[in-house]
Length: 324
Image (cartoon, rainbow, N blue to C red; front, side, top):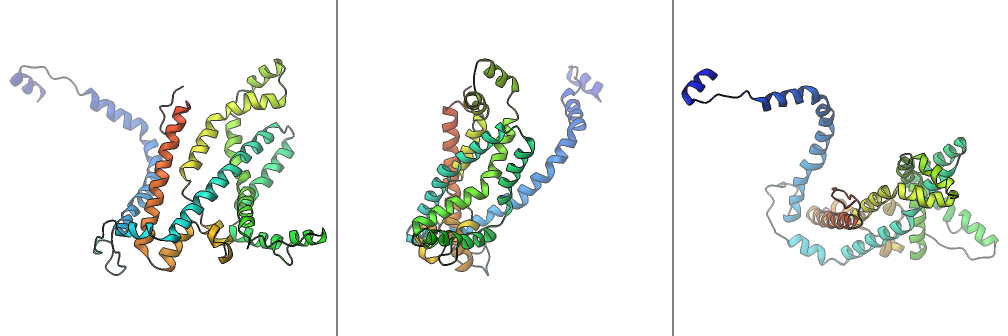
């Protein structure tokens, strides 16, 4: 066949090297693609296909007729959301609580990881790590029970101690300012050990010769920590900060839902509990879908802005391309 083509065209055909290289590549690497297949299917089935449900944010969704048969209403649902006072209360509460959590909670895992790295006794180090990890695995329902045991006005341990010291008892969960403090402290206590794992993993990549060189130059342990350890995990700190900024408009459901009550609703109502209330309690599915879509768009914008800021600082960011 090849010779017939050469006779008709007068040109000599060349062997298909590209096809041979492709077959060889697949034969040598198909195992990696098989390993990659399950997570791809997971994201496709559980993350991307359900996105078609966002259509109900632009429809007057009827549970009986379904998504496709419900009439289009354009941006009417969004206009209704933006005119709802409760939405803006939840919106600003979400930003405030996330911002306070970032300010108060972000540096603590870094400090814990730095000091754990300085502990030379392996048994003590494992003990401190285990104690700090454990709260992460406790549900917020149980933690709320512990908070009640400590902070209940009449019988809580803290209030009993305050009364014995001559102070008045404090209703921590019914006072707005104290409620925010309880929220922040309970979050930090639960997650500080778990968040420190990432920084401890990053610390293992620092070359020990840098510490030896710093010691020869007369640096003590604190100076080594400042001039060697912190620069060594700077990239990880930037990435974790970007991730936290990128989810500034998202907040976990369990913690505010378990801790909130009607007396502090002005500071405890957040977007996650607001969406739950509108979508599942009041059955306003289009409304809750519109709120969720707006929340995701804000988060995505924040993520792009944080990535751009990281590149201006000379870091890689999420998508690479930083100045080095």
